[in-house]
Length: 168
Image 1 (cartoon, rainbow, N blue to C red):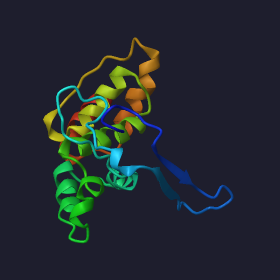
Image 2 (cartoon, rainbow, N blue to C red):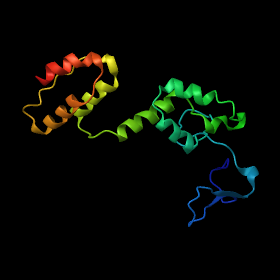
Image 3 (tube, helix red, strand yellow):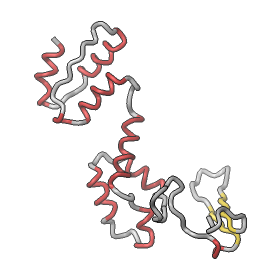
Image 4 (tube, one colour):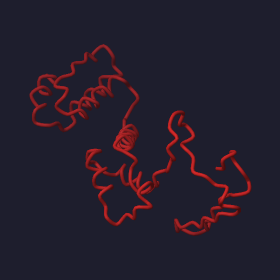
């Protein structure tokens, strides 16, 4: 990107061997690098802060972790082997980015887009915040299987009494 917009005087070429199983690529910049400038994110309407994309490997690593967003941020930021010039791309921007990645991963694992079923799953995700959700699915045959599956899932000890009551 240049001050006046896009330019063909400076471009990036990426080369990868097609028949290779390797994930290595060669990135070659061609042209006058002095015309390139860092710019804010394309969706940004207010901020003039320069946007640095977080590396895909970091995003994948965050998606695989089951810790709290705070712990993930602290552990990645406190890694001493990351040089300061790479901190913008090798660590998450903030806690919100980690929350969004974890939420997207949970959404991928959802069985259905059914609002009633997702409400029950959300109750399990929220832990002790939600004690009881009572639904009357007897009149709606499509929900009966979902609710039965939820009731058969392994639960925490404080839910056992409620689940036994609901199953009877």
